[in-house]
Image 1: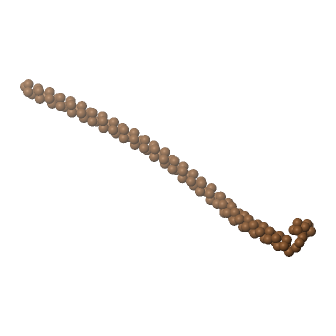
Image 2 (image 1 turned 90 degrees about the horizontal axis):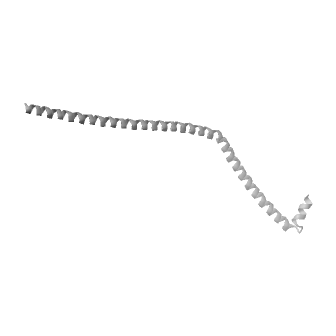
Image 3 (image 1 turned 180 degrees about the vertical axis):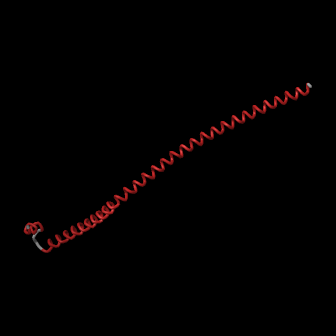
Length: 122
């Protein structure tokens, strides 16, 4: 009988220790799952923020594209104006060079100074 009591005590101790072990494992697993849930919630919030930022960026990009399209004709006009100014500048330089050459030619052809000729024209 003593042997039986000893076996019962050993079995009871084993059951208590196994229960304690299983309870500890359950608590650890529960804490791990809570931690994973917190990580999952944090990541979901971050993805939500990134989605909102991407949506806002796409809207802003669309607005910029529309604004650029609306002023594109102005850019074309500016380019044409720049080309015209460049041609006018080249014509002015050519006319200036021609008038200098003409003045030199007139001075060589006559003994009258150039200033006197211009005064006579007025």
